Length: 149
Image (cartoon, rainbow, N blue to C red; front, side, top):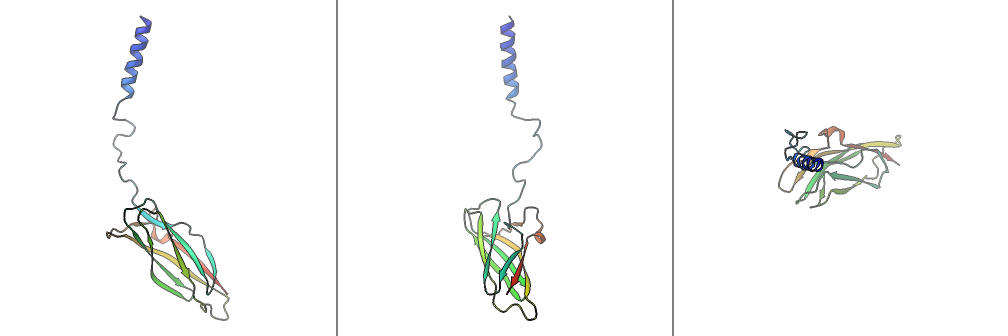
């Protein structure tokens, strides 16, 4: 009789554990809790000589079935590269942009200059605008570029 009660208890417990409506997750929507976004892989400052180039990597949270065009500006310190673009290709998560710093941007008696790269927007091929940065703070998506001679 004890064996039958134990087997019956285990079977009942098994059926109870198969409840599809978990009480712990009831009422939560997990469908799209974080929108698609584009951000800089690093916001650490970069140092580059005038007349040379540097690179910046843009990353996305999830890949798309279409290309994403990322727009950015590099301004200040004698550099004025506005409305620059790089394309994150279809099914990819990253794109690398090369920023060419022109020669002669440092004016004597200065020995350095400072420019800022700012991520301005990202748009899919179908025209959907993506969020800038994981926390949707576009002002945080900047890189300081220190230009030397």
